[in-house]
Image (cartoon, rainbow, N blue to C red):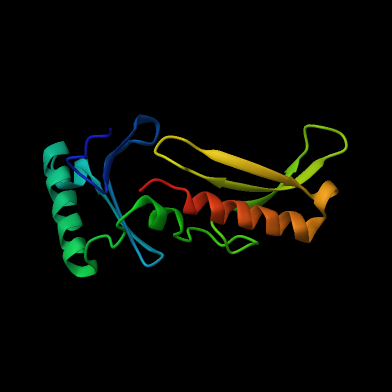
Length: 148
């Protein structure tokens, strides 16, 4: 089991090649991402930059409120990116490693923590529309079988 982070929403970024050292704060609510970067140099050291990042995070939580997600199933259904299906976890794939290229619709879900399941439906076998619908159904069935 993972232990909760002491600084949720805050991560350390050290990129010596770019002379970038600081803390990155990210908060997402209703599809919008709010972020800020607090550099060590500008804030007077590592500890001061972390304190400023934590203060910013707490202020952001006060404004936008806590996360409304209560279980893994709800988290899996959040729309993160606009795809062709409009359904998170279903995508059209073209595998160019083989000749002729393999084209299929892929459904993916996580039935339990740290486990990923995928199911592919061939466009050659089922046709474009049917393979897409089968992938959507497989994703929905996988989401329903998820452990909370």
